[in-house]
Image (cartoon, rainbow, N blue to C red; front, side):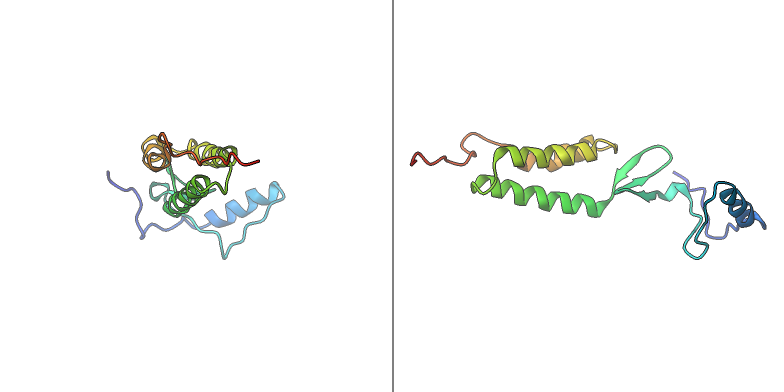
Length: 128
């Protein structure tokens, strides 16, 4: 895939002024030192996703944090320190976040280690 971006592309004169004037009509201001124009082909970071024109991808650091967090919660559930309802809510919350990206393969890959097998459920104490 060819990228249409180039580091040598410059804004035409007056573009920044036109944007500032348009924002002023909407009673908004732009932080000119922090604002930057970038190519959408490289992805725009937004709410934990990299948004591209054709698709969205979950940021790599979010995947790492989610993988670690789900593994810790799975271990806590197996140790009996967390209820199944709490563990299930964590998994469903992450799946709900991930569904906004093109992530079918990623979800399957991450959840394969958290798949409950017979005998995985923590033993309940019969002492009362």
